[in-house]
Image 1 (tube, rainbow, N blue to C red):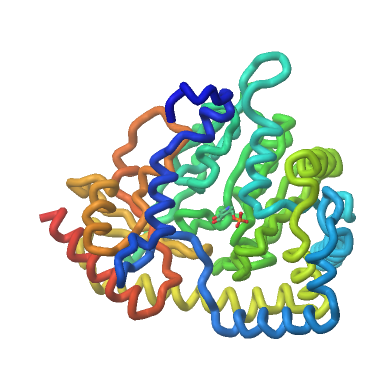
Image 2: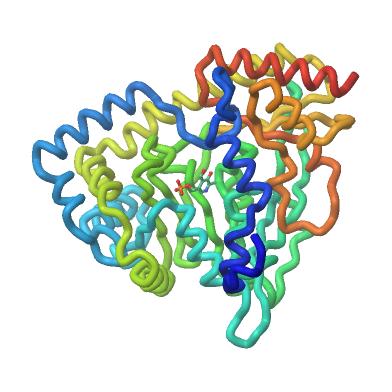
Length: 418
Ligand code: PLP
């Protein structure tokens, strides 16, 4: 945009038409091409059993007046009291976490909670110094990238790559590289990770927790896909929280992204700060999401459907997509990150002669949308060829679309290698 509009520095930064905004626009419009195959976005799958469940649940809430009550009243700035209390109880009883309702605040989607948290901690400090959020393992969630009010609020590190059998691989945090000094405001990771489906091991989490404590900074864990809900996790992972952890959760990947309900679990001081920000920016978080989730806790369904419906659905879809891809592309230079959770596969085409940005354009021209890997390596100064050789695709589409989309990817990759 032109500066003749006289926008503030904030206005200038957030009005930028960044590449990622364009990309997300593409994803959202479905290219306006009939028959486009949307392997790009992060919308959760429409799982028939969950759709029936939510339909039944909201009918009950209409009948007993809960829904209209949620629609007709403001909650407080921390978010719906009854839900915050029930969730604190559930987590306290299930995991013996030392928490009460004072350790939880809500937001309109966890995306906005990240905006509040990152800007609460990083950027320009009262003494004019500048602090950053440390992402110990890039590729990391694209949605963080532009969230700083100030520029340059992330520093990220390349992972170690472990090559696995069956043309798979796995990233690990390279602890030998990570440097923390006064300029670091917090450590942040998504677990499982969007875009890769990597699940940081319990040991990695323990080490990051120690690093954070030793340096007197918080560890932010983005649990949008994690345990205990929605629990799109295919390996063993212990739910992790202590008073130095800021655990961010969401109702979105349960199948309710339209409710825009995010949940932050943290020490009382952090929760108070987020509550104050909520009041100023939005008066109060929306009430319908928490009312629905409260109902799910009361009927003991929240963890049950996560374990018995959501997790198996995504697990089976991911296995199917891996099998289709490995059948369609037999090149030994092609590997898939071991799918350990979330709803994406991360494909690596070693020595690909074109960038995945170029591959994205070629696929888009054929009606197949993926996300090129380049976007997920923000916070790094050095170029890394690996970043141009990877792409993210979701595996939530119908089996038919998955098959057709993967056929087109296979053809374009073969052409590019040839
Ligand atoms: N964190 C991760 C890793 C995500 O993938 C997403 C959405 O895709 C979010 C946070 C934000 O989700 P929401 O704002 O819907 O809670």
